[in-house]
Image (cartoon, rainbow, N blue to C red):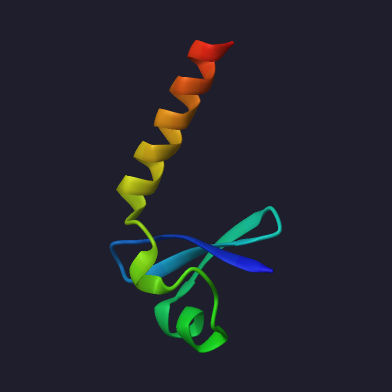
Length: 62
């Protein structure tokens, strides 16, 4: 099942298709009913910042 990752500044949405991720137009994301809802997706910068935070936390635990 495709899952939305984040919204990009150009209005597209990065979607993960079982390990492969690609950008698709917002209209296609909404038309296909992908989850989470578009308004719940972070902006790209927020997404990458949270990923770095998780990596940093994991590195401290190791």
